[in-house]
Image (cartoon, rainbow over all chains, first blue to last red; front, side, top):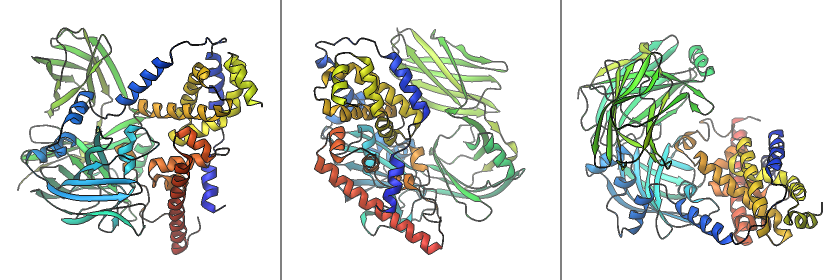
Length: 439
Length: 178
C-alpha cells in the first residue's frame, strides 16, 4: 500500500466518538416498543420524496426557476444571476461575448460572456448535465476543478461565487464571479487545471479589462496601538467599488482581540452616509516577515464617484454559531411602531408605504443602536416568511437609517414582524478616515 | 452476529433486534456520515434521523443481505438533508479558504488534498477507504453501476497520487522532512 493510501485509510476510518455512542442510546429510547406495520403508504412516501427532489433542484424562487425553464432563450445571464455589481454593469451594456468550451472528466462547460473591471471578473456559463452522486445544490460548484490560474499564477484564494439554475434539460446556467485578492493585470489568460502544477489545461480564456474606471491612490497610514493599516487605493467601476488596503496584523493587540473572538471589518460610506454593500472580501499574505496582509474589499458599484468616502473599521464578536444577536417579535399593525428596544436604544419603523403587495418600511435607530447589523422579516399565520431587499442604508451624524422593501406581502394577512439585532460593532475611531474623491 | 436472523426479528417489530443491527453497523454509519459532513455533531444528528427512518421503513426492505447498504444509503440521504438544513452547501466562505500556502505543499494533509478534488470524487474516495466497504457496496449505496464506481475511484486515485507526488517533490526541493 502506498503512503498516501495509508493516510487515506486513517482519514476514512475515524473511531466512533462517545458523543455518537451516547446519541445511539438516546435514539434507541425514542423507538416505539412495538412497531406498527404501515399499510398503503408507500405510494404516498414516494410521492412526497419525488416532490422534495424536484423542489430541491432549484436555487432561486420556484416561480423564477419555473419562468426560466420555460424561456426559449435568455437575453442576459448577468441580469438574472449576477450580484448587484454584475447587474449594474450589465445595465450599462458592458460585457464581451465569447465562446469558450472547457472539457474535463465527463463535464463540459461553455463560457459565453465576461465582464472584467481590473478588480474582479464575472463569467456567464452553461454546464452540461453530468452524472454525480452529489445532491442538486452542490452540482454547479462540484463541476469546476479547484485549480484556477491567472496567466501562470495559481489562485490561492479565488473567491468564487456561483449563482445558477437547473434547466429543464438537466444543464445548469448561471454566472460565476471571481474576486481574487491578488493584483490583476489589464489583460490575462484565465485557466483551469485539474490540480495545481498539472501539465494539462482544461481550457483558457483571454480576458481584457472592459470597463471604465476611476482609480484613486490613497496611500494613507493609520495606527491604533500596534494595529497598522495603510489604505492603498480606491477604484470605482460599473462592476464594483474596490478598496485595497494593507493590514499589519502580527500585533499583540490584534492577537488579543482575536483571542476574544473578535474580527476586524470595515464600513465604507459615501458622502451621503450610505453604507456600500460588501460583495466580497479577500486577503493574501503574509507579504514579508512582518506579517503584512493585503486586503481587497469588493463593494457595490456607484452610479458616479461620490465627493468623499469614509472608511470606518470596526470589531465584531463571533461565537460558535456566528455573530452574537438578539431576536425580537411583535404583531404587525401596519403602522409605524417600535419593534425592538433595549436599555439605551430602540429601533422604530418610522414610515410605512404600501404599493399593492409591496410593503416599504423606513427604520430609524434611536439611541445607541447597532449599525447595519440587523435583519427584519415578516411571518404569516402559516409560517411563511417574507424577506426584504434594502433600498438604502445610511449613517448620518451617527444616526442609523435603513429603508427596506418586502415583495408580495398580502394585505389582509395577520403578520408578525421579526427583528434580529446583532451585537454593536466596536468602532475604532483612530483607524477611521474620510477621503475626498477627486478624479 | 447473525444479521439475517436479527433482521427477520426486527422486521417483525422486535426493537431490540433492530438496535443490535444498528450497533453492529454503527461504525460504518458514523464513517459514512463523516465522509459527507466532516463534523461529529452533525454526523450524530444524521445517524439519529437515519435510525428513526430505518426503523419506520424496515418493512419495505425484503432482502436481509441488502440491510447494510440500505441503511448506509439512508445515512447518506440524511447527511445531505443536514447540509441542506444547515445551508452548508459550498459557500463563498468555503472557497475563500486558502487551499495551499504560498510556500508550497508542506502543510497539506490528506483532507486538504481531498479538497483539491471535485467534491464527488473526494467523497467517493473517502467512502471507498472505509474498512468493510466494497465497490459493490458503494454501487448499491450510491445507486450507480459498479463499473462506474470503479472507473471513478481509479480516476480519483490517479489524481490524489499525483498530488502526493507533487507534495513529496516539493518537500525534497525545500529540503524539509515534515
